[in-house]
Image 1: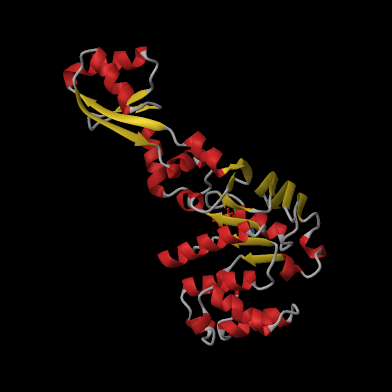
Image 2: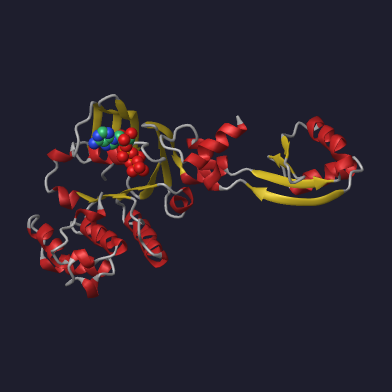
Length: 314
Ligand SMILES: Nc1ncnc2c1ncn2[C@@H]1O[C@H](COP(=O)(O)OP(=O)(O)OP(=O)(O)O)[C@@H](O)[C@H]1O
C-alpha cells in the first residue's frame, strides 16, 4: 500500500517561507482532507510532493520514492491541480486520449473515465466551450485515467453544482474504500467533514492539526447556551454563573452566552436562585467556527471587514 510521506519539508520563495518544517503521512484506505486559509501552503506542498518544485529542505515521497523516480507515474498517482490546464481547442476526449496514449493506456479507459465523470455525452466538445464545473470533471477524469493508487485533488469541488459536489464526495469515498490513498485540499471545513476520514490543517506553512476527523469533531464542537433573564436579575444571575465556574458573556441583545453548558443545567441553576428565565436555547459551536478559531492568526490574507472587526474588539 502506498502512503505519501512528508518529512521536515521546507520551501522558501525568497523571504517567504511557504512551507515550514512540515511532517505528516497520508495513509491509504481513507480520505484525508487538507485544509488551511489562503496562502497556508497547501498547493506548494502538493507541488513539492509531485516534484513540480524543489524543496528548500526535507523530503516528500510517494511509497518511499520521490515522484520523479516512480515508474509509470500516471498509473501510480492521479492529480488534479489546475482544472484550466487542458488545451482549449482540443476536445475532452482528445485531451484524455493524448494523456492515455503517451502513458500506454487504451482508448477504452478514456471512455470509461469520461462516463465516470459524467462527460460521456460531451466528450466530443472542445474544452474551451466547457464551464468551470465541466473542466473540473475533466480534470478529475484525467486524474482517474491510470487507475492510480494515490489520488491528489486540489479543490475538486470548485465550480461544481450541488449534484457535482455530491458526485465528487461519493467518488472520493469510494476510491478510499478501494484502498487508495486520497488527499483532497479545500477551504471549507463543513464540506471537508462530509467526506474526509482524516484531517490535516496548515496555517502559514506549519502543521496545525493531524488527526482523525471524528476526533476533531468531538474535541471542537462544544455545547453552549443562550439565555435571557430580566434586566433586574442580571447581577444575581451573573454571580450565580461565576459561582458555578461558568464562562459567560452578556451581549447587547440582552442574551447571555454560556460556554460549555446545556440548557437543562442553566435552567436548573436559575430556578435554584429563584430567577425567572425568559428565554433559553441550546446551541452548538459550528464546525466552521471551530476551524476559523483554529486558523485565526494563521491566515495570511484577511478581508478588510474581518480586520476591522478584530480592531474594534481589541
Ligand atoms: N511560485 C511562487 N513564488 C513566490 N511565492 C509563492 C509561489 N507559490 C506560492 N507562493 C507563496 O507561498 C505561500 C503559500 O502559497 P500556497 O499557494 O501554497 O497556499 P495555499 O494554501 O495553496 O493557498 P490557496 O488556498 O490560496 O490556494 C503564499 O505566501 C504564496 O504567496
